[in-house]
Length: 71
Image 1 (cartoon, rainbow, N blue to C red):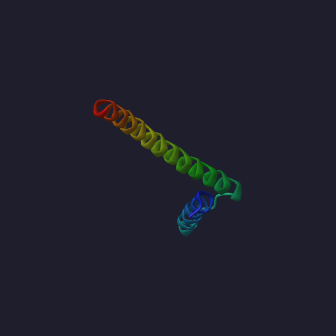
Image 2: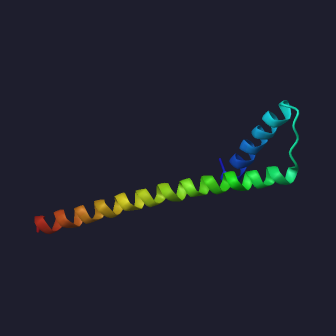
Image 3: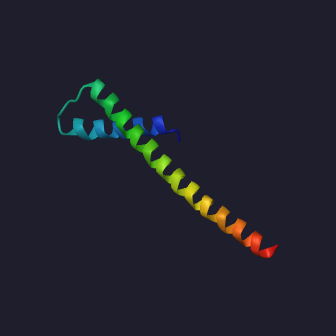
């Protein structure tokens, strides 16, 4: 699922919960909420990619070291 669509679904669900209590929040605030959620998703993805890149870097160094010993 595309992150923007997912963020919108989360904000829409939040809107449902808020409206069930009888409260109202402006559409602009829901748009801001969607952007905040999307930003959070992006940050989590980047963090995961960085950890994966670090693991690959470590693995690459280990492989290089093992190859040098093998020669």
